[in-house]
Amino acid sequence: MTKRKKEYRDYLESDHWQNLRKEAFAKYGSICSACCEAPAKSVHHLRYLSFYNITVEDVRPVCGKCHSTIHKLHKKARRKNLNYFERWLFAIKEIQAKIKTRRKREEMAKFEDWSI
Image (cartoon, rainbow, N blue to C red; front, side, top):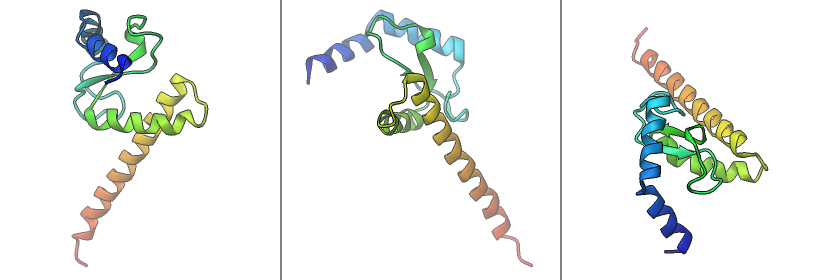
């Protein structure tokens, strides 16, 4: 494990992070800020200035599935030279588009069962 990863793991166990996490859920709620459907289980950093130099505005509650998707999409967004907030918006738009497509498929599946 690299020194940075160890510092990060230690930070996630710190009182600062635990309090910030609670504050994020209190401010933004317990529903995923990305898909707006699933219960949020984790808190995603929108940006890192340093481990202890962040506020509740720098994080958002997200579900596990969206959190993983956001990290994958952030790699794609970095190649586009987007700033931290633009990367967040990019990820949200991608997730919302996937949800919209899924809902359309579900709606169409309802009609496939109808016989004429």
